[in-house]
Image (cartoon, rainbow over all chains, first blue to last red; front, side, top):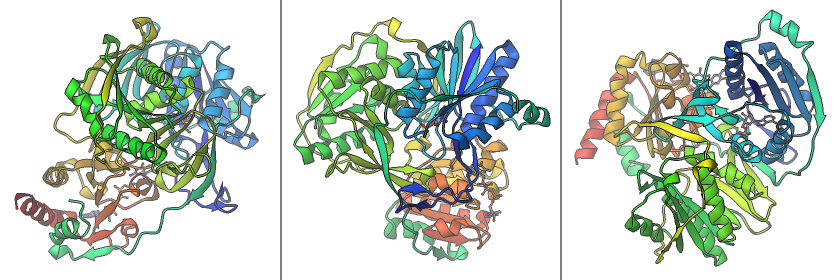
Length: 245
Length: 323
Ligand SMILES: Cc1cc2nc3c(=O)[nH]c(=O)nc-3n(C[C@H](O)[C@H](O)[C@H](O)COP(=O)(O)OP(=O)(O)OC[C@H]3O[C@@H](n4cnc5c(N)ncnc54)[C@H](O)[C@@H]3O)c2cc1C
Ligand SMILES: Nc1ncnc2c1ncn2[C@@H]1O[C@H](COP(=O)(O)O)[C@@H](O)[C@H]1O
């Protein structure tokens, strides 16, 4: 098995989001960056698969040099080698095209992405990549096993769960429950220093969407407190004042 | 502007999110004097297809060969791209449901179209084409422009109202010319909780956190939810320790929801939890700690013990519903 895991770097979940340059740029001042949590699950599951039945796990990240700490962490968790496409990840289409350009000649059996990045929440890379490589793509998988050249999958659907099979090669996007994330150990961290991290230049396209500006949600008005002894009044307020029930 | 909208059905019945999408499309069409073509894939009865006219579809294209009897991202995206080419569409609208998320990016790649997902505004076409989407799991919003001639947008369910705009929708039966060799995935089993409102589609949500003390107390959450006709949700630790299924976990690393009403009971209101629920229209926090951060994000609050407060609320809710 030759597996590729797409790793994006995102602000830590505790980040208080603010913007600069007249609300056109995310303010990275004091922000800690981490591997997107879903990508970490994807990586761990990929490693479990190769540990069971052999193979290699490569990672790919579209990003500038400041993503290398996260890439080294992925190597410390256990990825065998990593590729960085040296470009600003302008939009999902651009990112998917860079990954597709790299993957098309590498013969991967399986490509993982995360369900979505927790900053942009696009959830688009898996489908774009599947189409660009002309292979199936299956979103939000909660389970994957490989049997006889097929992926046996479970995925979330509206109001439930679906079991399906997909012929390899295919793209899947990782959802919570897939596995528990691994924490790198000392040996892994040492080994990561000398594992191959190849940097390649971007190829082809331009972005076809552009984030023009950001906006923070309007601050909430004061919370209206209801006396606990008279808690039933809540229902009255929701019905007659808020008119939501 | 030539508009295509995907009308998704579940077991032959159009989803509420589909009517939202058709209504959304028809409002754009009205502004631009253009047509709305709704695309139905799979087996839907003729009179149901005509329902799409109620919300402003001028034409309904129906794809209903055997290949569509199970949902696959490959076949459904091919049919939608086929319809888009057939109509020379320049805007394709898809609701951001689980199925919508599978097919929208594939359609975009097929049509070399710029795509924006999770859209929560009507497009601003005064200068190009710009839409608003939520980013950072609801912690903020972004205005994004699309520069390509063909555009794909997926809209967030529960963000737009269903609006009647009666049109005499004509139905055309289409053939995308697909064979089984076009499909490399195979559905084995579909399991849906029956009689439960899916969290992603729910207008009302009752949610519990670690303050509920244990799974044996969830009957309180469920009774309130059932009485109101709400779905149930929970915080991350609650699903991590298996008090509740993972599918109920909301927040930055769970599901992002946008109901009309979110009632949070025994949930502290950590930033990662709020990220997934803060776009709810009305938020109620019930917590015994007056300093709980949730009160800063809530419209209504009750400082008190959930086990004393909930029976009172349930009683009032039952009285309202039986009135
Ligand atoms: C990377 C990362 C991602 C995360 N993602 C998410 C996420 O997506 N969703 C999420 O929910 N969390 C997430 N978290 C966890 C988050 O930080 C909080 O730990 C979590 O939301 C707390 O859950 P809780 O409020 O149920 O529990 P607690 O923090 O333990 O709070 C329990 C609350 O119940 C109240 N309480 C106790 N007893 C009663 C009673 N009898 N009556 C009324 N109130 C009572 C307490 O005052 C307290 O406020 C994430 C954390 C990390 C690090
Ligand atoms: N810059 C990037 N480099 C590599 N993979 C990425 C990048 N951005 C997104 N991805 C992958 O695509 C998934 C979905 O991202 P998004 O479409 O931004 O929600 C992520 O979980 C990653 O696996």
